[in-house]
Amino acid sequence: MLFTWFMLAGCILLFAPQSFTGKFQLAFVDVFRWPLSLGGNVALTARTQQSAGENLGGGEQRLLNVIANLEQTVAEYRRQFQKQHKYTPYVWEGADVTVAAVIERPVDGPSNELTIDYRKRIGLAKGQYVLGGESIIGTISDVFPQLGTARVKLITDFTSQIPVKIGNGNLRNIMKGTDGNVAVIEQVKTKIDVGERVFALRKRGFLDLDAPIVTGRVSRCERNQKEASVWDVTVVPVCDIRNIEDVAVIIMNPKAG
Amino acid sequence: MRWLRFAILILVATIVQKGMLARWDYKPDLLLILLVFFSVYSHPSEAIIGSFTIGFAADLIGSPLPMGPHVISFGLFGTLLAYIHRVVAIRRKSYQALAILITGCVAGALVYFLAFMIKREPLPERVFVTILLTSIFSGVVGPFLFPPAAYCMGIETNRFQRRSRR
Image (cartoon, rainbow over all chains, first blue to last red; front, side, top):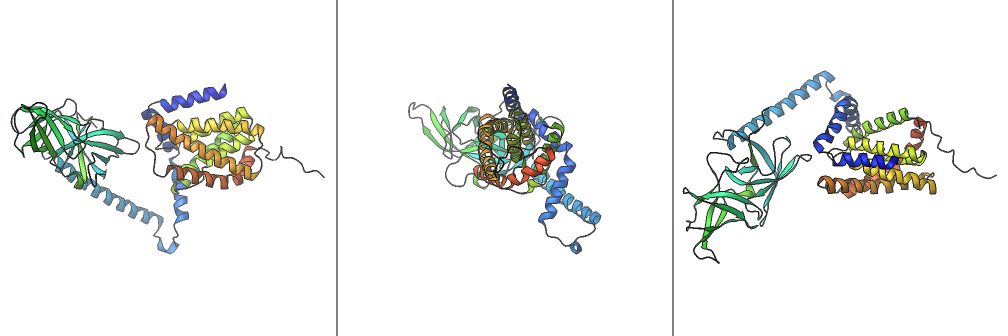
């Protein structure tokens, strides 16, 4: 009976939302911060062979360490600020972008996913649009808050479907991935010139911007095999995914603070 | 069972595991060692409570894994070990080491299996090597930590040993 009750409690803990149960882990670390850090210091001292003569006084060395850490923090913030502004040369009302480094990218052959680093763990959600090289390259497909990473499904992924418009006209359609390195827009009513730009259109909650954002360009336009009166348009991304180092995630209606 | 001593011992082991031992990639799992210790040297009903409590402690320091898998895994295998011990006495150091090794492997595997299946946590690289090495280290160190743990808990470890015939 005792075992059953405890097992039930374990199952409740397991199935409870991680945002709730994670608070226990954080609370433990907060409450026992001092003994935990003490343990870490002892371990570090044991592992590093330092002579007493090499060390500065405890207070001075500590201050030097603080300065070194602050310098690194300032440099990192400056770098992030520059990156952020590289991605937002124009003002989007009600939208924010968050820059994230690319951890894994396709090397050779068709691959339609990117893994990005996202350690802030706030604001990122499935379906959000991702900018790379000033163009829409895909959407967030998975978020792993515990690992601080997220997965980006590229526009060329065969499950990807985003509303687009072709060129400067009013030709709207859905662009689908093919699992190659291209996407297609099927059954377009008019012939499209090769090289024409394709723009991602607004999508409520994810891309509520006034102006569309470029995502690809037309590389081929052929008649539909079943219905000769319409055209199938092949689109290639305008961003070179293989050389991309960081991306920006568009967060609509970011929470204040 | 002296529960206050039990709580303090588990707390100290948890802090040492998370603080001092956290720097090493491969290390013995003190909570696993204590799990086997209490399963072997306690009454089964006490062992059940102890196993789930140790599992909860392991979950507290188990980040980035979610809470829950350790409670279930440690509770299940701690209880199982306590009942096995009623049939097969685990008194010799070699048996204790083997019990820690096996419990560590199966409990560790179940922890990652639950985290993967229920919470969709991606498996870390070389997870099975980590489980195996942790179990081996725990198995090697564990039996030598039993006497100090028994002293702290006021348990007489050799009360069930057979006396040699003269």
